[in-house]
Image (cartoon, rainbow, N blue to C red; front, side):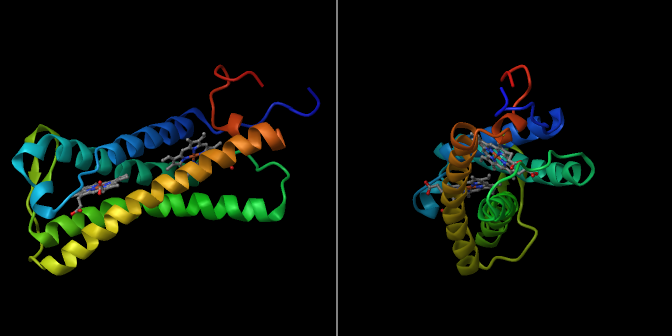
Length: 185
Ligand code: HEM
Ligand code: HEM
């Protein structure tokens, strides 16, 4: 009881945006189109690619909304922890934000420079507004696949850190990102 006082929590909107982003990133990763460029853009793979691109663009939009909300909403003060852990947490969160922007930007610019339209759910297509520069586009598309792996590794470490806070440090960090009714303090 004494070791686990009621933590301050992120607000409902910040929590909802956080968990929605986590689910969208995971599903986008699972549906990430792999293989050669020809294979990725086969009509038979339209559905998976459309789902992947649509989810990825939602992550992009949510990243803007999150940062805007973060700038105005009150956030919980971090608990007392070793300085290195505080620095690592800040760096990790910063890198996750960077990836939430870098993933869609590399994907969209890569596809357009390769000469492919964006293909979204509902058959919506957005033709390239830029001139084709295939080699650079392919390089960006390849970078995108690496960044896709990177966000999963980083999110995995981030989740482990949250569990470390909860079960080892026994502070309120994980609970601060969970609704009160889900987890009794
Ligand atoms: C959070 C957002 C995203 C994540 C986590 C993500 C993840 C990935 C991953 C891991 C791959 C490689 C799959 C494999 O090699 O098996 C991939 C490929 C791809 N993604 Fe994304 N992606 C995201 C957003 C987007 C968006 C917004 C688009 C829109 C154009 C997009 C378009 C593509 C395309 C076209 C490929 C194939 C690239 C190539 O090899 O030429 N992705 N993505
Ligand atoms: C793709 C998946 C994920 C992404 C992109 C992500 C991203 C982030 C970001 C950027 C923050 C910082 C919030 C801010 O200050 O604005 C954060 C906080 C947090 N996340 Fe995640 N997260 C993901 C998955 C998870 C998972 C799976 C867990 C738990 C198992 C988790 C637990 C937390 C907790 C507890 C915080 C609060 C940390 C603190 O205030 O020090 N996250 N997340």
